[in-house]
Length: 406
Image 1 (cartoon, rainbow, N blue to C red):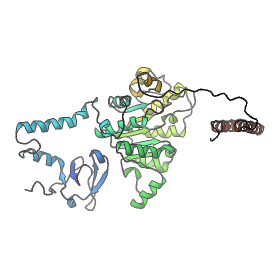
Image 2 (tube, rainbow, N blue to C red; image 1 turned 30 degrees about the vertical axis):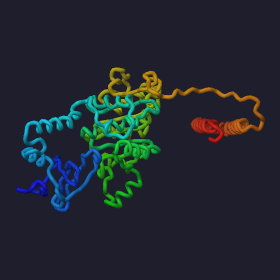
Image 3 (tube, rainbow, N blue to C red; image 1 turned 180 degrees about the horizontal axis):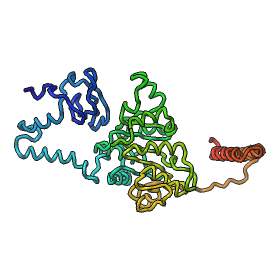
Image 4 (cartoon, one colour; image 1 turned 90 degrees about the vertical axis):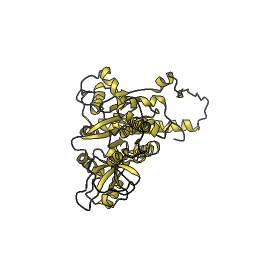
């Protein structure tokens, strides 16, 4: 019989068991294939949730099977509730408090595990997500209301409840770094951005055949790379036909909706790639400040990607079906409820009697001359080429006339 403080290597852990080593609590994800392989572990402590490690069980100091340790300690006087009834009652209440939120949908842990100043309205998406059997939720709040924070709260809560063990964030290329920084600083969650640099580093360390999606559990991928088989094919290998306890977070989700208004509008490559991928995730979280582009069929297609059991392309969306899976608040709505959002007031400034050489007048004259020149050139183009040329000129007007410095 060994001491309480000596290593316990009498039994080898199996997949699904909890072990204590290196000062943390881990879950065994895979057993060694041969003697030189180690057990693959995933950390479940709050400050390092999801981190993985590969260890040689026999070489670890003070490695313990967590279940064995808990049962053995119950019989020791004064330890973990052993001994008198009062101490055991206190221990039992502690266990109940720790497990209460795993079954109670209206008790949240995530807001207390995040480094953010939380506004009350940001709890509604979390509450709706926990009431769904699968988290298929569209967060369509107005710009500036904190959709990233709301998504982070849902993700953190699902991790704490152990309903998620694999997460992918799909974001526009310019937003991938911001997503990683915010999830790290506000929620303590480390994410890897999958790009060419990440693949090069991984293959240098683990070999050319290493699958980047099998080397972690939390990733960020750019929208631009979703159609690239070089990145998506290994992801499909990890997800297979369906992966339980997986979460897809899609930022700027309106990009996935077909732009056409017809019943059989042609889907973009991004839409087709997302359709193939989203069905493999158990949970889906879509974010967009402009989910509806004015075409009901396009909106129905977006909702079908979110929840194909509830919505179908070409079938009108009923409010009763939409309410459980969508959160939509405008700043004006929240301002009416007492939230302190500044109201934007546009007041025209009229300027008279400007000299002929004023920068504003010179700039407008130069733009008018340039437009006349372009129109003469556009007259020789095809209809499609002319439309693209005029669209480019509109972008120039928006930037050039916004202000003199711009």
